[in-house]
Image 1: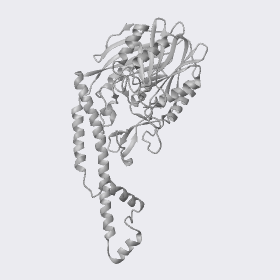
Image 2 (image 1 turned 180 degrees about the horizontal axis):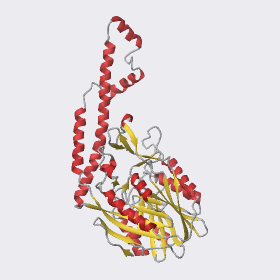
Image 3 (image 1 turned 45 degrees about the vertical axis):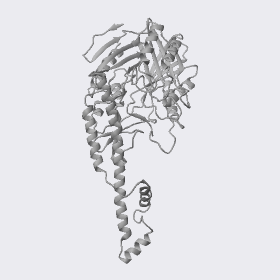
Image 4 (image 1 turned 180 degrees about the vertical axis):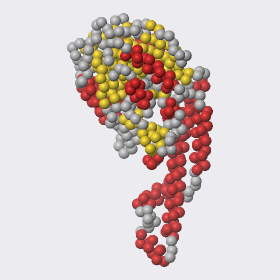
Length: 504
């Protein structure tokens, strides 16, 4: 295994397998194990750890997908999980730690506390089933199941769509961000032509849930089930989460019907299957693997951002004005004015009687009520703004404390580049914004180049430099550890990795 020179100081280590086109077929084995914590409450559908072991001559690697929110930091999978899995696979199978890739789907399934042991178990089972395979790459398309959650506001700021706080008023929204409809596909067939494994990469937060709120692997779990059941023969589908940092499921804020991930997952699975039919596999797959650890700049502007939010909170608090209404009196009064704005206090004929008698008691009451209603509504919108600010202020304070405890100006982030035949993949541990993935794929030389976040650790949101400077304080801008300059460091190194993977 070769070690390249470090470039520049922000790059800690670079590890490359100098692989060329293999003389014989690539070897692969697959296995899965359920990791659902069935003691944690009702279960709608199972969650899995799946392993795809790859072998090219003396070189072995494993791609593991886990139906969990993150690899460390969040949820049930602890920060020791990745190191434990790597150490045990190195001991038992001889797979170097750098050659172990673990991606979290980012679903919010509750998994077992011994997920690391179960992951090792399934990887060892996959290694025992190695067989020669043919590889092919392709892409599908699905644009019906997701939406960009960042909203461009008329005042130039950006907000995001979350259950943690209210939406802005419709008239304040000026535009939306992009989505990535591409499904990146790797197909591995046995020499008899029957599918053994499908790796598919797509960008969407799998956080829709199911009616009743039971434990679920969400959109990606349902999509994998559709793929596997239609392919048959024991084929295994591996979902690699893409650049989903600002991508929600479609109609994420639905309130009139139970939210249900299954129809969305079915659409994704069927769209992947449609594209898989057109992929032709070959038995001369090039196999390359590059691992780098980048030192990304940590943000240093927490205090300024916290102060700015607190100043905005003070301004909004000062704008609150008292009214004679409360919720009990506001709601029926509001409905009366919506039903009959011109004559809300009584039937129209009483207004005509008052006018004929030279009186305006009802008109004056209406004017007073209108003023109270308008102020009450302004207060509600102010409360909603304060809620958004407070939620994101708490995130800033959390990461300010984490950064102070770290005592470092940089944060390590592992990047892995993989080439299997024409399929090229680069991974990252952060929640990448979709624009970053779109940009990397647009600039890539190889036609089937894809990007996965949530891999080999978790470093929270990694928004674009422009998003990071947003004055609107969306979650992605506050729930982050990195400075705006991180993007340039990351994209420069990824470009170099992709060049190496694409070389003849």
